[in-house]
Length: 171
Image (cartoon, rainbow, N blue to C red; front, side, top):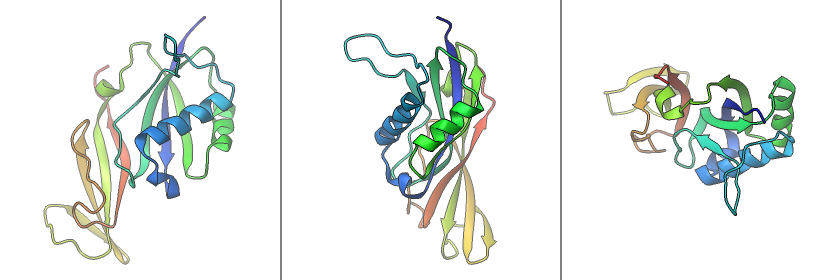
């Protein structure tokens, strides 16, 4: 059988932001299996879907730049993506799936992430590039892949959002 590797972009927001990384992985795996897409499984006695996620997030952070790689034995088109979205709980959304090379590695592709820190009052830490929008303040920070992620409340922020994956790494 011909194997095809896909890079999926997804969002996790709303109440689902309180799912742990493991629970998020299970939710996405189940949604994909329910669509009937033939997914590659691991070898051995207790087989699982062979799926690789990018950097895990602490519980409570909104993820608008989630990435994972999965290998299938069939093409995935827009209709299959829409079907998977219907099978996900509210707050999880598959944005797109794109074919990638068989040797594709997320750790080499993603350079880092942009995070938005939402403050309800003007932050005391002046090291951020801060923008006031109405009643809130938004700070944007960059974290390289596999470096520490700003946890909720770490800088006194009300909310943390992983807003963008910075890609372009060698593959």
